Length: 111
Length: 111
DNA sequence: ACAATCCGTAAGCTATCGCTTACCGTAAGC
DNA sequence: GCTTACGGTAAGCGATAGCTTACGGATTGT
View 1: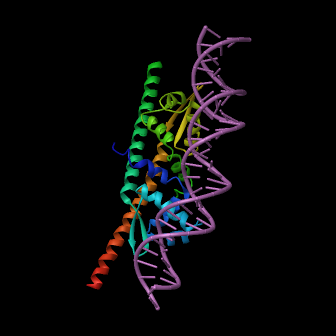
View 2: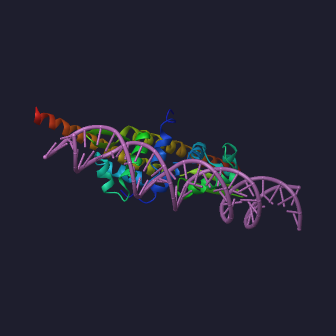
View 3: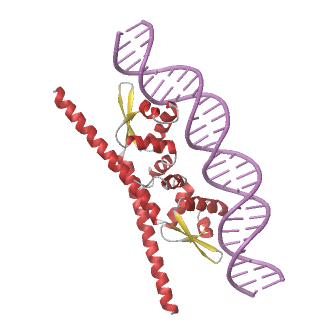
């Protein structure tokens, strides 16, 4: 519990291919806006806008050095998303086990 | 590795609030379309369309009994998403550690 | 055979998303 | 002080997402 508030924007942020491509390029370390845009098929302002979304979702953080803005992945939010999916997986497995058990019980009764 | 192909639609599917609400109601066990729609602020066809998206993303499975369609969470895909985020978290932590080490080295050199 | 239940699909509309171009502010270098 | 590099923001546009209503197909029960 207590994962309600900040996660929806994070999941929404992960929906866009460009944003996922940005995150992929940040996995190995921080990069500037220009560096990111150079390796992507969209313009620099587009990357800047997507970084704004990623920052609002707390998926990345910025570190400014002169005029350069170095963006990095925020591991905490990634961990929160992972935990949310972990709980969902756990619940789904539990529900599946219960379903199988019920079916087994049903077979026993009608045997 | 090997998580490239099916995950993008799954992440995109998790972006919509209605679809996340559907998944939330499936955590405790399978439900029919009508049952899901009854607890949501949208129409039944809307739920049906969202279930189609979730099914295409392999996030849910269907089990048909007569005219009823029981939907359940597909734990395998949830696990795949979790693993992807796990790797991303791991890489991001590694990059951060390397960054800290470099900064430390830099301080030592200029001291 | 007929009525009722359950659900998927088609058509259409509105809102939002993501991109581009153009512009402006800020910090470093000569 | 002026120029150059770097990047955030505004305006505008085309494409897409998600919803609604209306319809049709399939199964169950009488």
